[in-house]
Structure formats: structure tokens, C-alpha cells
Amino acid sequence: MRVWHDGAAKTVEVVVNQQKEEKSLAKNDSSPSDSSDTLQGVGVADLNSEMRQQLSVPENIKGAVVTQVDPGSAAADAGLKQGDVILEINKHSVRSADEAVKLTTNAKDKITLLHVWSSDGSHYLVVDESKAG
Image (cartoon, rainbow, N blue to C red; front, side, top):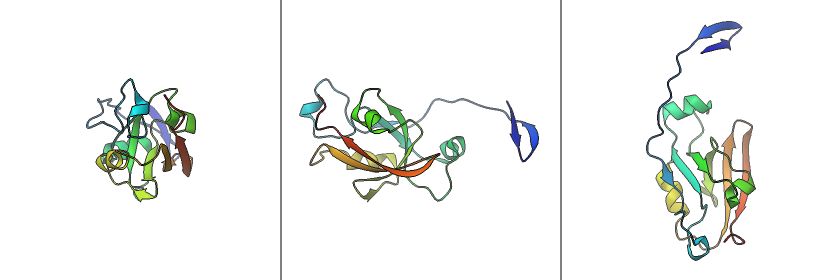
């Protein structure tokens, strides 16, 4: 692939690999209203150096990268997108995919506050799954 960098054309090799260690934030079953897990239909992975470089994520950003958002889910409706990095869930810092999963398991209610980094900067999203199902 040819890219422009610092005013000069450069040729770089692009290797596409299958994403490793993807975790689902919540079980994607047929009865989400019975589940106490939140962020149905969202998949995350650890933000490793490969993902960081691929998504141009600054070194100071820590979190879990979104690898999947089911269309029509409450998270998609709130604006969560593949490639976003979840920094916080309900004001609790997220440092890994495992932490993100733990913070969305057995939630007290179906409204989740996300602090998210994307290429446009950081912002907050409110995912309301109380009307889902």
C-alpha cells in the first residue's frame, strides 16, 4: 500500500490478521430483557500495540477497543462504533477487555454511561437498554 507521510510517498506492507482474544460484553441470547448484563451485542478486545497502531490511538489512552457493535442494538443507537476505545463504564476506569466485561455483568440497571475515545476525541455516550427486548 502506498501512503503519504511527512510530504513523501512511502510504500508499506499491510497484513490483515484475525482479531485475537475478542470478548463479548454481554451474552447475545434471544431474551435480553431477562439478562442483567448490559451492552448487549458489543464485543471488545484488549488494546494491544498492534490495535493501537492500526487505529492511531495515542499512548496515553488506556481501555478496551470495540471490535463489534450489532446494528440496531442500544449501543449502536447511542453512537458506539467499531474502533472506539472504552475508557470508562459508569465512571469506573477500563484497562482491559476483561474489566469491561466485569463492569457490564450483573448491572443494577439498564442504563450505562460510557466514556469513549475515538479518532474525533473523547466523549460520553449513554446506552439505554431499558426499552430493549
